[in-house]
Length: 290
Image (cartoon, rainbow, N blue to C red; front, side, top):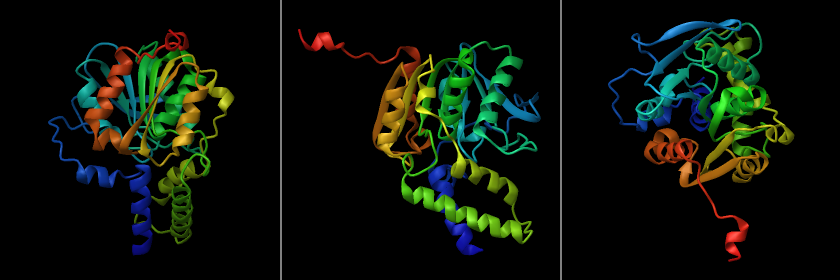
């Protein structure tokens, strides 16, 4: 059991399933209990589940989407920063935090559909969207399947498929080992943790997403593609995403990892904020020839 927990903690550090390292290293003190705020927290019926969400600030709507195994609290640095300028809508994704899992298999497509329905219920026609890790995948699927809902999109550490062409092999291997151990606990009918939920979360990492490059070409919104240069996602895969979205821009942070939004929020938030205010500009080819 101890060896299982050691491997799982390592995996969850890499994939943000528990955010344990980032939370332990984060010394920021927020007076607002993001993710557990009884003053603003609400539930709404979305598709087949009750979804928990919180709203902060005023102005243009901005949707924040956390990663695998995270929750609203995972986006605390972004809520605190962007709520000064935007109306922040942030929810616990299906099967995460206080939101229900539902009875069917957990998929990114369902999670994207959930957010589109949430925006409809909040009478929001379109919004800026910022997704981190699995949240970036969900953001891409929203832009593909619900394009009218996305005005601008920023994604950090997202991938199009779950294999080693997109993700470094050591991370793929850790997911495989963790899956084997979770399956053993399920076979034993162990009740020390919610192994069914852990199996669903690992299933996302192991089997999903499966987004075609041609689908990226359908995205009409402006998109900022972000990653660390020591991310879980291969740098060439991040570049591939950027190259196949018609109106995309690219930011790979030097010396940064998958955890930049919480480990270096000043750099991350400032970069995303600049994109939302006014996308970065570059010279046209003809300008080089003058």
